[in-house]
Image (cartoon, rainbow, N blue to C red; front, side, top):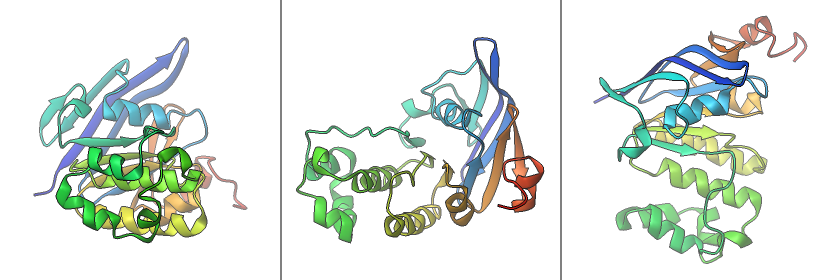
Length: 221
């Protein structure tokens, strides 16, 4: 059965500056929504509000017809990849997998050229790209219906980026995914729906011309 997430009437201000104003967004399983916007427009803020770790001045979140104030407190609803690294540095990758995954999921998780190579290493010994790859794969392998990815491709080598895109597409068969990244080309490549945070509101994007229209891209990009 398809699951549906809706967030409506979202507002968020910092002091006298209103970052988000009356945002509405709908995501359903099978969607990969690419959220674009210039730095400081509120993309990360909106993902935190969706996850429930940021209260927001006003918001209305509904998943499968039920309203939630903090969705992350309910198992199986939402997962979130923040911009910063979040795994404990002193643990090995094997220990991390045991914490995050059920035993039945570990063999398939390790059946991966990158993970199998690093599984005995401590998190502190991983390269930035290896760590980001591990974090994204862990979040995608949770049982949550919806996943929010903030800057998933940042600091990741091109070959790993292509593997991550495939992984994201594979998991979108059973999840709804919302992601944002400063590299808009990767976002356009992996997502099947697009939106732009602009002047506190949200614009649906059909093609690259819309990004020029809303001044996210220049006509020469």
